[in-house]
Image (cartoon, rainbow, N blue to C red; front, side, top):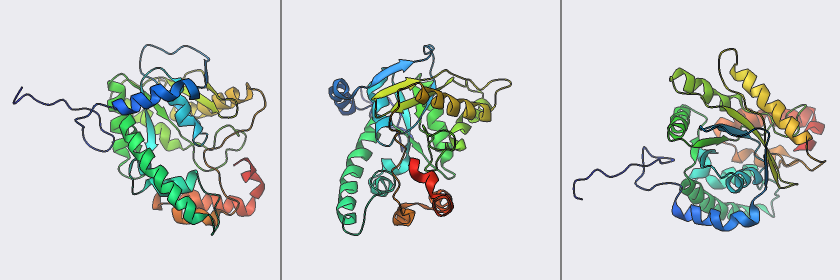
Length: 286
């Protein structure tokens, strides 16, 4: 009808979209690949009849795909904003997925990362991902997360950094900033959902969901951080011995990938470089 207000839907990078997400093309791809890629899914406790936030290890390319095919409830996932743009996605892929190159293979991998970047950026936008920023635009990440929870959808967060996690090889050292969303929701007088730790095991094609915790009186962000870390370790140790897949496959010489780090990543790069110089043995788990 002429003059009728058009519906506004969630958009990863804009205020709103005229297209409802997940896009029907993404739903179709998910329907086709699920029978072939769906991992075994086990819950330590049942999910409540309300939105939740899952904190999962990334396991390189396995974690996101495993959760998309394993979970039956609709969710939106936090994804680096770099992966939502064709211009920045290739460098992100070179940094985390294709870092083991030399002067002979780098041109080929650059071309491969470009093709992957185009495809993945389109797919992530079609899926309705939540962009993760590491600067003042972090508020956008938080507001879109709150918008998602208000719609009754779950949220998946991969808090891994590129740093090793002493005492827990099942997930890289987690970024504490990924847990600040909980305090943000509380300060906005919004209902803070329960948090469920997740361990995605690529070697055994298994996804384990741990026991929940909620930000409430007497429970702090640090308590939740420690709970997620401990639960993922417990879940990993509950499985038979297996090869652990880290977030990123780091090259023996960190300097090879420095040019692919953005300004916001410099601190992580410096820590990695120092670790490699003074404690190279600790990087063997990567």
